[in-house]
Length: 280
Image (tube, rainbow, N blue to C red; front, top):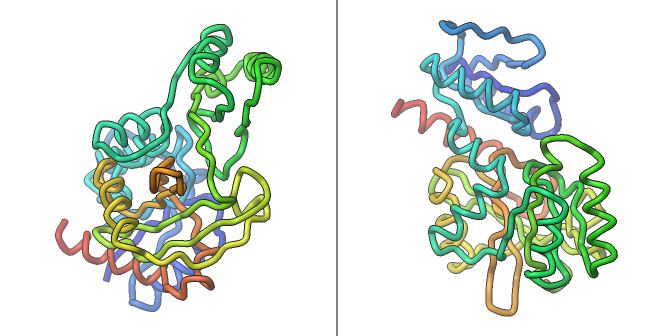
């Protein structure tokens, strides 16, 4: 039996399924809510392993760091979560490991960002360096749009909007692919198809099963190893030159993948948690 900490502030469908599956296996599930946890420099927590299900804002990363330094195994590991939380880091790691990924330029002022956009050539995708759910993305088609968006981001004034992450736009066939990697296995994948250029289920994209081909499996596992492995959601696009990886996420929602794929994702994740804990 494991004392399994579930690091989350919100209990959604995924968290309920994970808690139910862990309880069914006889594990003691402890909801680790960051709103209630207090950390010192020498903490003792009742967890054998912690499964991180918050979406990795700086406080969540800090909590993972402190839990690991208290000798508790975390899934995903702090270093993996830290890399995945930063799109700049992900892009560098993918390119370093020769994984197909869109070109990216990074700038730190509106003026240099505009120069970078013009250098890359329109259209480009402007993303926050940290973010989830496809939010605050902008497709920039011309200089006039670029100037307006950059001025708006600059006026917001926060740290997150002072890093201008500029990604080359990759035309895709009205859909993208999301795959779930658990350890050394690509357990399932789906197409997300929609009329909007952001093909995300939150924007009404239709989700359908995607066969896990040898090419898809190899690319996803390569991307997972590049960030350090664990339980990961890999976002890919189909380009004219083949599959391209554009994001790797350390905490993935999987409710929309359950029906199309028929895979018991929570069971697969708990299998991995038990496997990791047995070798800790």
